[in-house]
Length: 377
Ligand SMILES: Cc1cc2nc3c(=O)[nH]c(=O)nc-3n(C[C@H](O)[C@H](O)[C@H](O)COP(=O)(O)OP(=O)(O)OC[C@H]3O[C@@H](n4cnc5c(N)ncnc54)[C@H](O)[C@@H]3O)c2cc1C
Picture (cartoon, rainbow, N blue to C red):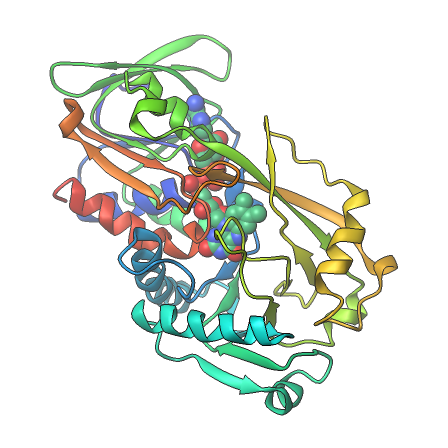
């Protein structure tokens, strides 16, 4: 790297690091920034292993960052897609209920959504569901018209281009392995692509390292366990269905979410090219492992057969998996995103973003704006 000091270093070129790079470089024209990632290009981890759903902001407790940044981020994301011609579809989504208990949970979701500022939901009876989705079985459903799907690769490509045009330097194939807090700023040590080591100083250090963000925080001297930053890895597998089944539904179809919001329940999403896939499940795992266990097809089939009766178990093909960086461990209650400027820990100018699981893609622009505000940009 040709510099030894810059204004800002962003660690992690997933959708969050890219959105932050774009936002800060636009707010601080002429300032210097480096975007470091260990992979050969952007978006090689969680940001390219997800459902690509633009969430409405229905589920999360009111007042949390997840709720507020999802609702704000959704609007900003649709505006950005229109401006930069990023492919998306406002498919809408149905959360379906097959039992009286599930119908009652839809009422609770409706209240939660309204409190979060999502005011376009509609409760549908079974005949209205049949009109919209003749192949779906449900007694009731909540229709969310503002839910959509997006080409997340095109989104990240545009964010990278904008950031680069604003002067951000990408440093791919660079692995951050040590951080020294200085009297003013930070010295970030990294391994170069040829395995040699180097260091770069900065005033502002933004930790957008996804699954590794607790470890990056630890490199600055923070004890992740004491700070409540320790991450748990929670895998979500997907199974794809034959192309022909994709034409049988138009909306995304979800069951009511899991009680503790570990996940949203195995659901059916569509890709922009019309394919249908099921997932993700929630499996806490000890280390990063992206394999999909074909044996799990039976569980997926059982989870959806009541509301998607046209699916047969033999239709399911293992597709891919992503890993959620979760702050809550198995059985633990809901945890919000951590997005924190660390002056209180005597680490001014350091911003940790930890536990950026779903709805992180949807919230990315809201998150980037919040980082800008935390830095006074
Ligand atoms: C199964 C699943 C489904 C999801 N579905 C949705 C959805 O439909 N809608 C939605 O809004 N959100 C969804 N999400 C959440 C969304 O995908 C994430 O919130 C988002 O992608 C997080 O982006 P990120 O940039 O924080 O992390 P990442 O994309 O993981 O990027 C982090 C980057 O940091 C880099 N890095 C880490 N350590 C180092 C180091 N030491 N040195 C250099 N670089 C380093 C990594 O290489 C990586 O590129 C889903 C997540 C999962 C797992």
